[in-house]
Image (cartoon, rainbow, N blue to C red):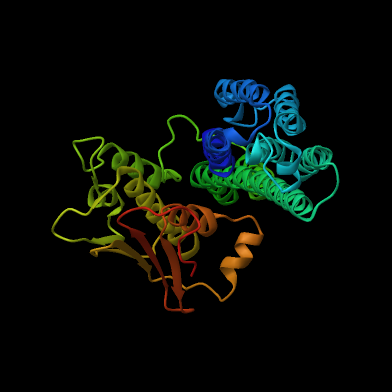
Length: 416
């Protein structure tokens, strides 16, 4: 996360500092060439030669200072501005009065703007306004009286520097907002991953204990009641109270309660690929789900997917079968159909249960029952895929899970 934020920061500011470095070098060469071509017109060129020697040495020696905001310190900015202003004020001592009145350039010429731009990049538009004002005052003193071309140049530098400083401030504010949004997104994804694991394991076990306790009665009924209370409290915590978490060590993706957990462990061990870095065969991960009441229809050829994507898709299928057992009953039948498309893998889970009433999925999510929201839809969303439910009361439920061949960034998936 920190590396990603650093890359974003570099993408906003680093090009500006690089441009400033190039500008200072080019304008230094331009000022020297301008002086050399007009050397014969100077009344006293010796002070100008000494000034250009200082300016060139300073520019080359301080290139690291304009590499980024951290190295561009306040003492450097003050010294740089002083050299620029000193060159402007030194001009009347080296050039003729007539050339100055005719609008001749100052000794540093447009190199001065580099100092002002450094103020803008470092401190924003307020620092830029301060530096521009100092340069403007020096230009007016050098000219002796306000002239049209001098005022024009002063205003141009002043407006340009303030505009660049304002742009820098806006870019930095946008960068901070984006970094905060990325932090929130990362925390949300961590919470959803933990919530899926909790739903697939702890919540399923607590729900099973509650049901068994109600059937057995006696002390088991009290144990079931306590398990039910803990389940409700944990659902509330998972749905809104967690901000940061990590996946428990040794946790098998898709592990649920009882029979499903054992099957999923077998599927996780047989990932369908001898090469841990190579693709996994989805069929090997889904095979343990087949049984007396679960039929599996799959292609005759392997269905390769990236290992992580294959495990997440298989875990989503396991969560869908958990929902079949919980809501359609232990005797309900289910069918798993695997379709291997050129650009995606589609797994359909269908049952012969009573179906889902309209609006029930949204209501369950509001109640903190996160099987569909996180264990199924959340997993597919992280893969860049989709999960869709089709249910007719009295005619069962069909869940279509679609995962792309190459996983897409979260948030790009189509929501259905």
